Length: 141
Image (cartoon, rainbow, N blue to C red; front, top):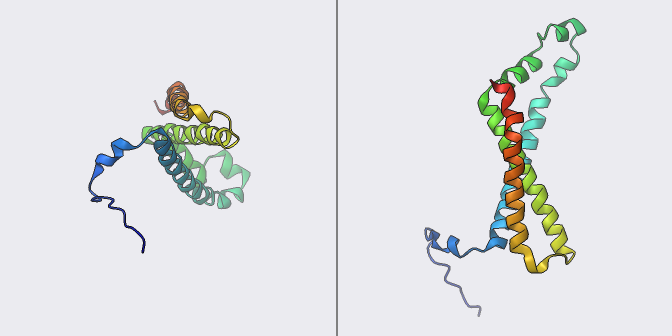
């Protein structure tokens, strides 16, 4: 007969304080992966609306009268979309850096300093994201 483990109440959020850097890295990596998958499907759905625009005449495209071009131009003018793009960059950069960190750990490089490399990937993600904000926000005003 197997022993059962008392995991406590589901509402007991105190155990989140017991998580170490490795567990947070795992949670963030899974979360960013799901966000990127969701973005990919959304992006494909939006790009599928470009199919009618691809068959439009050159005069229609030059006059910017096709629905796809107007939709993209309108969305890019919104500050909310620009902020979401910065968020997407942050998610993608963290996922790449953490994935590289995990690859190195799997190869046996940096096993002793996993916490430090996780924090370094967070700091580098923040630096890259903050440095890119002027580029993304510039066209919104």
